[in-house]
Image 1 (cartoon, rainbow, N blue to C red):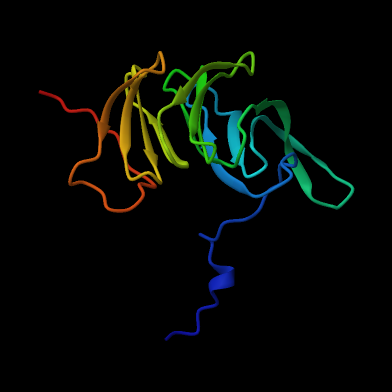
Image 2: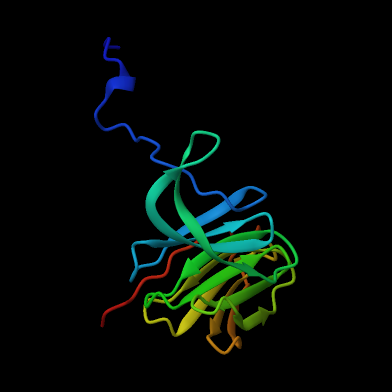
Length: 175
């Protein structure tokens, strides 16, 4: 072991500020691809917050607040476990322990679709690269494929998972 002090490493990350708005633990933070000054956070307080990032103002506690909440997305009845942003940056998708997914219009903050078919907590959600399909994973040991009209098109269950599905990836196959 060398005597190098890792605290002086130029590659260390540095806290530049905080965002204040949620009342319980944060479960996910996602970037809006088409707008680098906007992020969305999901929380155990049953909400998502759309944040506008700024230059930062000093708060009373001494922390630098680097953004402001633009709108709160409320409607879930339990923890919001995961969130995803559409490729075009117009929609957010959330999965909750209330067994539902919600599709949110980021401009209005309104739910445009509610997805109900899981029998246990939804743990993971994602958009397909073309924004035409949605995938969700749940504690009910299923992966569901949905269209954007909230219709479940396929449920993957048989001989696949013996425990809950917490994360996955979506990729495009080029033929």
